Image (tube, rainbow, N blue to C red):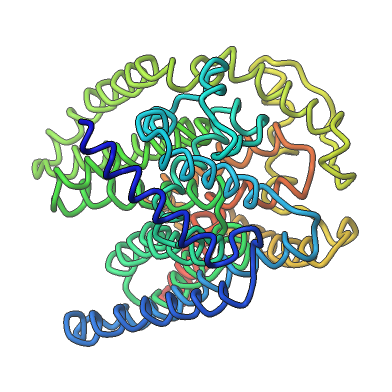
Length: 470
């Protein structure tokens, strides 16, 4: 044990020397750009070689390099916006805390390990030293915020302690969730490759807000990866053990950062797994008989899982506490001046099911389609507003087609479309109810945007094709 600790200290000290050599006190300098371009070039070259020699027969891989390059650009854009347009941001604060953990590793590896495993107690704060520095206390005592500093630890080490290179390395992994889902949907819905690529890989909000070192980037990738793994189990029965492991890992990430996303994912998982259990039965009569039993079993299993995870879900561990949390969080946004003045008002509501349902429609409208053009206050909001208007137009067309075209309702019988819509609806209502500030809203909602956009593209395209075939 002593030998291992000595090796860790020596490695940590050597690493700190490297960080200082690259001007550790400055976030972004010339060396950061040079190193980042080197990392990006190496990553794209490795991907090109892999695709060229292993995936030459799969045309969908032509999107990989372009989409990954956009992820890199999105991550760098986040650093530029928060470094030069806004006066700092969470991504820099999380990075600072990770650097503290790395410096502590050189001095006290065992204490650093405890912090990496999730310790953020008040007594443990005294373990940070003068040499290691101390983390931002507001982020340290927030379990969800502290998780980001823990999860970015390996990326900051491999990125030589520089925020830009760490962001580049992070996006190599964060890209896998969206890519896996894109590849799965592309196989399931042939003829929609370009539209699926736009929805899953190239949405501006997801490229920008989903590529920095902060909560939303982790949750976006983990959400899409969980849906991919569930679909792989439900539809292909391939690598079941591996996909279960990936679901557990990504669920842990989501629960550690934003537990309410996991709650919104449960109905979608229920729909996909129910379809999987029933479709394997070839006899139609038996299938009809098994459906109610499968529904009861899966609902019961879902409730049991929710109950078992109640402690890990914290304030989202029960229905009553979740509703109370919605009201408290919204009031915090309204009363806290640091969230800026870009508010939207859906009115007050009681922390009851009736109170939530009375505001659900407004929460969905503002949460999915806002900010509206007359509410734009800066260039970043303008992009989100344009995106929201496109979503609104597609939503109106899709609703018209589903409600007024004969036989169009059958598109909702597709379990993937139904699962994606259930998640999008629940998640956006939750975000719309709890958030009163557009600056936060445009980040918080990104896990639902690619799924909702894909559904709108599918419904409008499907109903149009069915009409032409009549």
